[in-house]
Image 1 (cartoon, rainbow, N blue to C red):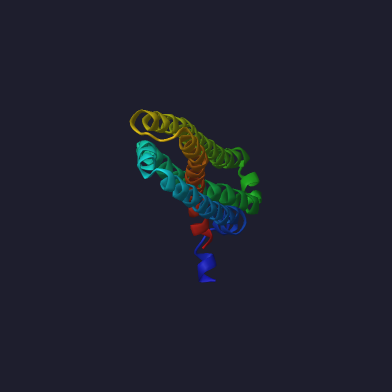
Image 2 (cartoon, helix red, strand yellow):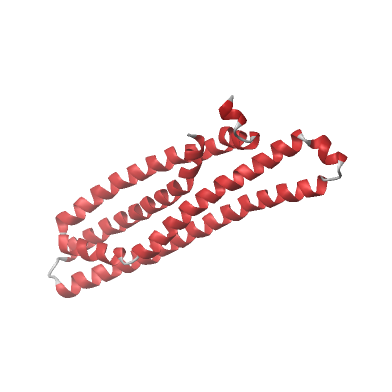
Length: 203
């Protein structure tokens, strides 16, 4: 009883009804992250078998984007915290204002109640939009980065090594399959960071 009485009903409703969806997302994206890591390890092993020097060059080119990627990860985690707060605001306002509807109507506070609920609901929309923009920036960055790294790697291989055309094509094919796995890893981790605050709230 002490645990329940020490918390707002809306916060408990949010933890029981809304945030479990994000808990589910943690399990989903953690699974995706593991599968992408396994696939990446296989392709990386094949590429290293063909030419470890070109692999180092290719990974080095991709590594130049790490600062931008770290910013988007940090942004996703911050948005996850804000989403938990926004969801709590929506649930708490709904529960408390519906349970106190007689008082609200007696004092003519309907408009104030609507404005408060609308503000919290808009926060949820705004945070979701910000997450979508962050994900789009991450995807765009990887599309450009992967294509650039692939082309530069092929150019360096042709210019400075005596690698055969057949092996070069095989290496390019493996990289073209490996880079999307890296993108998948980052996308899954980005979504995972956003969902973790919801899981923490449930726990």
